[in-house]
Length: 120
Image (cartoon, rainbow, N blue to C red):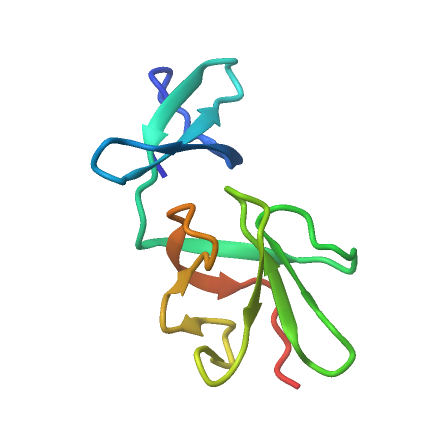
């Protein structure tokens, strides 16, 4: 994640704003120091997501249903995304492969690891 002028990393969630004239997604990030910055969304970075028992899962978190299905909420646009075969597989350490792309086109694209993952 990019850093604020104060040196701290911006925290998710970010607010999806739209696209540049070159169709690059833009989000509004806020720092704990109070700075608000509009930036292009940088993809393909490592992202560790927290597990929750709440439905729907809060932004940037995932839930595992009784049937073992995984639902993730995009931290940028709040869209729900399944993490499931045949597209994704989850390793014993919670690493998701291949990379996770938000299906709603907001530009969120990361290498995801599911925290507190317990294989079924």
